[in-house]
Image 1 (cartoon, rainbow, N blue to C red):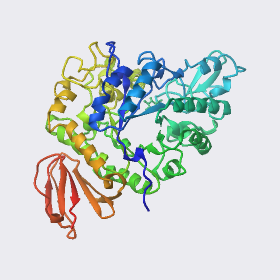
Image 2 (cartoon, rainbow, N blue to C red):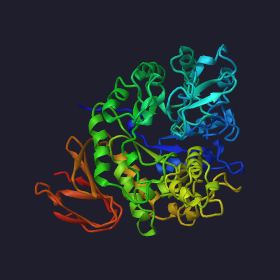
Image 3 (tube, rainbow, N blue to C red):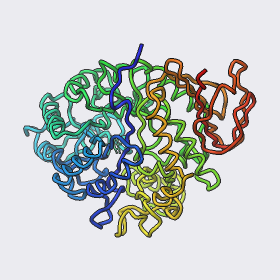
Image 4 (cartoon, rainbow, N blue to C red):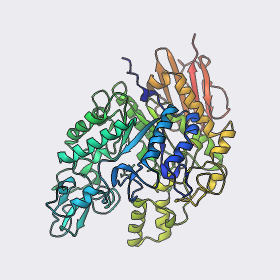
Length: 549
Ligand code: NOJ
């Protein structure tokens, strides 16, 4: 069976976190015109579409994920005219534009919520989820993903409203057909503008369990992939899933098996951001990753969706620390090779690769010195809760430093100047001091840079359909250091072998594999040839192609 070909399967995506990408108006915050300035850079990198995290009107409690007007651009990023210009300029360069769609919740400053909280009789009351409390507090024991109860008491009507995220992000009531109608009309409005797709935020949370369920083990259970969600998702699918439109759902709590219903021909989206491999990120004291678990997680998704769906491939986003720091190594000796090894590991799997801004130059975690340098609402909550329960501020900072989302949100490092070429004004978030050697300008000029390696991988993927549509097969399943897999289409075969550890690794090829028949296509370190018994140095990564007879 052959896989149906579409543009979004062949494309390379790039995630832009606009506040930290490029500041064009010198206020220390990135903006839409800043993105326009860098389209040529993205084109040169080989990017086919950008996903921009929310740029809508917002009080910015959760950096744009708290929307107060879906059809307005936040003044910190520009105007609707700036957006139209960006869309036109991106399209003129052959770059498509994917918007973030945040429809599990709004801001508490959205007109609907301002009305909703006014009285129980208000027309907008049922746009959100309101409940009476119990004698001793909230309606049940559900907790928010950002810490604390998921219910907030509103004095005005003495009822609680539900918020899966911050209390300033009340959850929309999808049970109400009027809510669905409003959201779907808004979605159509953006599609009519000519955008090319949506990354759909927090979509596995739109259905909740009955409120009589007190949660015992997993707090997410109350509102994640709850039975009956399919009804809402089908309604959404009929609006967003159109020929040529890319849809990617952020589906926390959806297993590979469940995903078969979510993606594929009849599915709700084209692809999903799965959470299985990302949950292996070591945010504790230790460095590195359990390679066996990583292979198991990624292989599970590759095999389960094979021929039936499609994968979104990613190693980073704005919610998780930098991959090279948590998954590879940011020590100078291994930084370059491990960033390249990670790139090869994920970019040539079957699926659509998403690169997160700065990943292509190997940006690392930030050595935060104080909680005041951190902006993310969840991190500040966790820190405060720890300090309130007696943890020393130093220890609390140590605990949040490695897991803070702001590690990935520091300004993009364009050059080595004071504010990394991101702005001429002091940026909203601290600049990583390693801009002195990790920056676009230097890496463009260095043929051996991480940036140029990304370009090579992208060129390679685009030149061979096998690396896009070919089947996936894991080799060396039980090897604790090497991730080795094959991509095959007809007789064309590639093998990718990556040492994901900071130790030497050896491999004995099975006797039916004749190393003379394989040609080295791409590697990150100039080390020995492939032999029946081969040594891989730390973070060495190679791509081979079977020679044609
Ligand atoms: C997921 C987004 O990626 C994250 O940044 C945000 O805080 C939550 N959804 C809430 O919208």
